[in-house]
Image 1 (cartoon, rainbow, N blue to C red):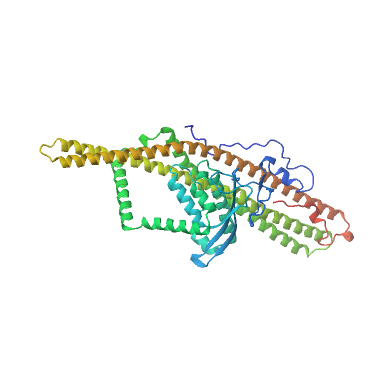
Image 2: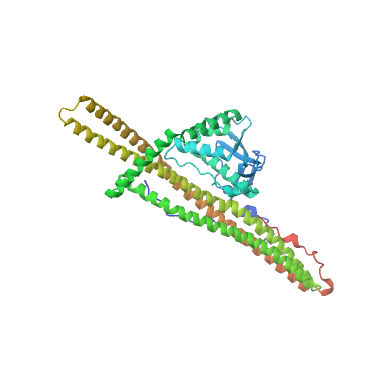
Length: 478
């Protein structure tokens, strides 16, 4: 296994095709040179209705897989208070063999709520130990109670990212659970949810609780023995895997901090938008105490500040969707990697524990065989226990080896995808910020020209308030 890449290894480079401060009307070419042409991808233009028409916008962090088109649309709040939930339309078109849809048929459309997405993630994790199952957005009791429009939209986008990541995964894309989620009718889905709830309830019965308690006690006993003896299951692990595991642990903290600081950038941009709007209003009020060119100049300043404020507020929204949200998604993904890491550790612990049980039963059998006059029944029973323990060891070793094999491929894939996605994210952020800086420079430059024109006029020819060609040179872009 290759050594893990250093955090944020991608180098931001610009091919020189982006001439941010070129002459011309403000915003005239901002869409063309804010991102490389290759990064503009066709996506559904109407996320409310979920139509599959084509448009061109800045791409999401996870584009749709080649043979899947999945949209999460039309969020509708149902109920009130703590019992309220949001239902979403999930529209799917697919040519994948595991899916029933075809290009000539209308897209599949089902209604799902957040609990249903949780079902899909849980089933995929249970049946694909060692696979990095994509992350769901976090639950928030406070946000759920408030159900703000912003919260619902953020969750809708995150759920759409989740589904498309699952459909892009080389293993999970063929899972029957995905097909069930995307295509099951209301009746079929109701039955599936009933089975799931029955399974969940079964684990809470006295028998299930006792079984879980016994397993927990054995695991605790195994950990205590390791602590007393100074041993660790890590001695059985691959050294390169230990490095990757430690790297992932440290990476999570860096990503969390990066997301926190990205949130600060978004808030600062929104605060700047508000400050500019208030400054413009103050300038307008100040200009009322003067006449002629001075008052006209203040009016122009007010109009320009208002327009730049609108552009700043739009920038804050864009940054939240294309920079802050993807960083949040990266930190969620790291936690999903840690779930796979925990599965591997659990499997290794189960194997070591089973092997210890087998050794203990072999010692017991040897003692029984060396005891004179002992009944054969006890020896036969001990032999059966050794055989059962040996079977458990083989099964535990097979489960562990399966996880190891899966994780070798998964971690390699994760590192490559993370480096590529992070590099793309940072490059787009740098290009977009350069474009925004150029737009601001041209906007304030246009204001300077307007003021100079006002000063050059005679007092009797002063431009009336609002008559300056304010909107002709400023085209704020988002």
